[in-house]
Image (cartoon, rainbow, N blue to C red):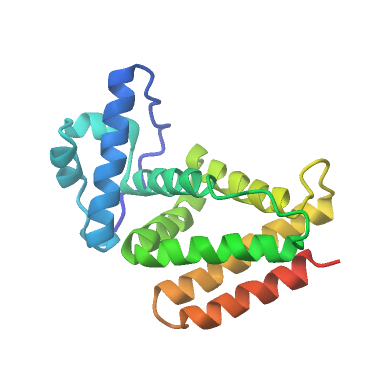
Length: 199
């Protein structure tokens, strides 16, 4: 079971050395998380392979949940480098669908790591977590930009982006746990985009 009792805020790296250690930790967690299930990843192993003291690891990441939410954030920030502007002749629903399908394929390729990230996002609902909030807001912002709603989104548009996010997480979990084929999930994503982002 993930360590959830420590609710203190994580430290933020400030110096170049601290940022390098922080990134090393994320890289090692991503590598181990790609090979092992969430329950089998040990914080001690991450500290050893990152060449940091266990106290340093826990200073930045008070729990394994904090760590894998941070990994999820780093992956989303990478995904944010996908094109986030629809072509002039491309419908918003199609542009968002293209992005979500590309992200689904990317996350399916690293199934264990993606499951750990999503599982941690769910666990992190029980306490304040800046990385989790960043993931939620950044993901919805990407959808709003591609839907061309980012200038001054209405409450309804924000709600649609939130609903699409929840829908995508749901079908993503199904393909990650093997209960729905990727081809069907792609159809599901397209239909959800049409329903929630269409005129």
